[in-house]
Length: 264
Image 1: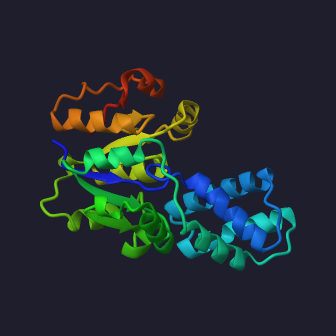
Image 2: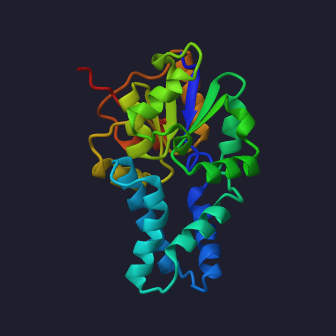
């Protein structure tokens, strides 16, 4: 039976990359820098790399905010303040939102029957602003943002903090849905809850699975609408038996890819 559902925000409920591109463009425009497609692509690469270093405990959040712009400007020989770029970007990013397909419907369908919790590694001021803009805060029993609680995914301490705030919490009644193998799924595995990897692009799913073969989600979905039927099946204890041989591509046919947990 499932009672508690943890949902990531960026690229699970809200389209982070679309919002990111717009915020970066606006920030660079303020600094009189042309935001070419190549520059935006390189920024996204550097940004992802810095967040991975945060997940590994090699950078602090404050270092991530500035370092991505310092590396970008130094690499491209741009004479501009990376501290100012970071402040401008953060302000613009917090001002709007873009829903992923099926996100609003997913929240509406899950809300009456399950306790929903937001679990985000994002910057608190940015995420609070986007939640307010999207008007979805009331769907969640509690909102857990790493900057506010002092731990970040995939650290087990992040989840332990969350669990302690939830009345009558049981790990066997809980799952997490997120787009990041290294943050959401690894974190859920570390915390001992069911993991659902949301990966919209099957080719990206294949590449990510190859890059992180040790991180094995319990289920993989490619569309948010698949989450409701999966959660209902788990709640009814009628989910198909787990099998270790199902490849990520199977999700296109079955609605979800089923993985077998290794029992020590």
